[in-house]
Structures are given as structure tokens and as C-alpha cells.
Length: 103
Image (cartoon, rainbow, N blue to C red; front, side, top):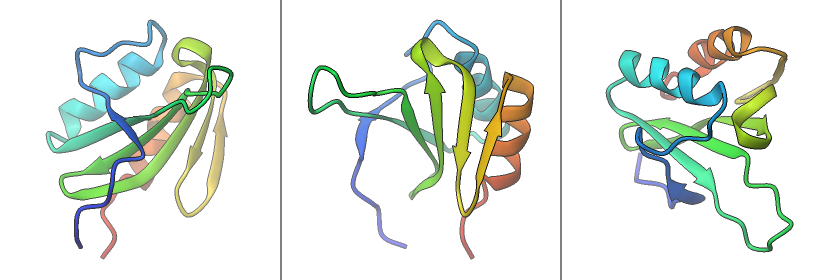
């Protein structure tokens, strides 16, 4: 599968929201060394940029995670389905289940 264009800006391990999303992404990075995280870029100052796209290696955008401001719950996890998670543990489980490259 060819590389897909970025939907936002690369979100590195050193980038922090200050909320529980940081711990969720840290856990995923430990489990998946090739994890790629992008944060949606704002096109207008009032746009919501609390949207993150997760991929593995060269396969981008496998899972989308929407959060409250500053990486806070609730979380909306989207892949082939949608799951709402009210806490980081539920969100981590939902992402882990869906973060698999397509066959």
C-alpha cells in the first residue's frame, strides 16, 4: 500500500496534550514501535483539532481518535466502526483491538 498523505501534522512522543491521551499514546508506542500519530491541522481558529490519526509504519490512518480538549475524555474511536469510551482504559482497549494493518 502506498504512503498516504498526512491529514495533519506528525505528533511525536515529545508532543503532549496534558491529558490522559498522552498515557494512551505512550502505551501504544511501547506496544507498536512503528506507530505513527498525526494530529488534525486547524484550517480556522475555531476548528476542533482534538482529532488524531493512528497508523503503523507506512499504513496511515488505521484508527481515528477524537478527544475532548487537551486530550481529555470522552474518546471516540473510529475504524470500521465507532466506539465511545468514557475513560482512557476503555479507549486503549478499543484502539488496541482496531490498530491492525489491513490485509
